[in-house]
Length: 606
Image 1 (cartoon, rainbow, N blue to C red):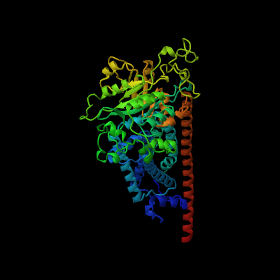
Image 2 (cartoon, rainbow, N blue to C red):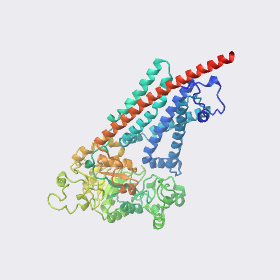
Image 3 (cartoon, one colour):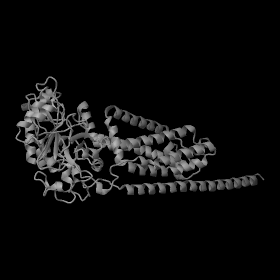
Image 4 (cartoon, rainbow, N blue to C red):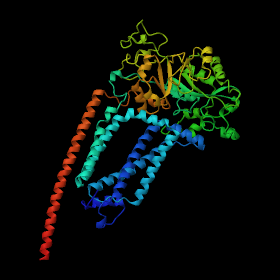
């Protein structure tokens, strides 16, 4: 790459010292970059791209990192929020690779040799191995996260394109410098074709970009409803009555929880198979720490504290610590029974949705846990239509028929005022923001109803549930639904978004809930896509959003694309022409210097 010591300044010497760790002036025979040095430069560039890609993956994974924390707790027995450590390590890797790459490019421009020190070589190999191990582990343990990355590209692709154009434009100077210093015609043509081939691919990348947020503002659907995942787990201990109340306070309309059945047949709230993460079972029953949660009787469960752990180890990084009355309330939380939850939710006007978990095989209610839970719901002093029994988080609310929306834009209902069972908020967009909205685009938008709802998701014994509790709404965790019944509600992971045709589902009067959505970028994407509701751990943050993070019209995006490409093209041409001009001046100056030195030498010889 570099042929001679073109920049003999102190600045160039410092750059060379940082890159090669050689503080003395290089011998003349080492002033050229060898083929081995070129290979290491290629590995450096590859390491930079890998670390940058891993940083992007890490930022996307932050939405689901709580699942990773729980996974490690179940295997190691110790709770630690890995969010901060995860980001710090990735940031250090990217920073190191970036600085080393910048040094190499500056040395190339200054015509310094690229003699990478052995220490840097070892560190680069370690980074590549670390990133490769992370990718393999991700593919083995969390393959669904590849689908998360696919979804994220719908939100970030327009901005990644801008960054790629900027990066390839900055890279043009060292490429031009290398091009004009290569004397053989074949390598020059190959370099030029390779570089401008990459440029062309980047310039045309928007042809493959598709994002729901590239739309007209008037077509923006209403803001999705919020379903509290285990309540409001960033504000209160999960699956407790305090979390239920916090769910209502932060604007969610549905409380999603997890239900198990005790050894004596009492359904209670608990997510984990073991009680050690969210209770003080280690101090109350030290010999039964690894026992299944369903192996405890209701009397034993009532002895456990289900809130102190929340104060000792915060489950979410960035969540504010509790103080005052909230702290005292959290300290006194116990494991609630399903019946308690239903009565409290009815008072708070919240719908209930729960994941019903099968007990161990030797459990008394192994075969009848569904019926036992159903009996509890039916015997509770609450309407059937307020419980959502799920195997996963699920959609919130029933949809109105298309006829109900005929005159929605004009204000009054077709047959007079809004029906009594519809809250006043349905007459306007759900989102309390000034965003324009055309209900004809999403005619089956699910309104918020004043009375709670009950939904049923598990496929086990569904026919019996429908017969005994016809007031419960049936929820499906897959699009196939039932052969004899068309599903009205779908509850799916957000990774399924590319597989869904939201508008077609709405035309069929099907509402869609996606889980688990914690980050504003993902919520904005689903908002633009027209999803009816989302299940979230961070209802207090998403409730404050009044508009998607970004929204751009197709025309403006086309203009932005054209301007960026035109500016980049002009800069590329200017860089190559400028480098050619500098090269000619340098050759002329070098020739004059050589002639002058020859004359001086001849004069001295005489």
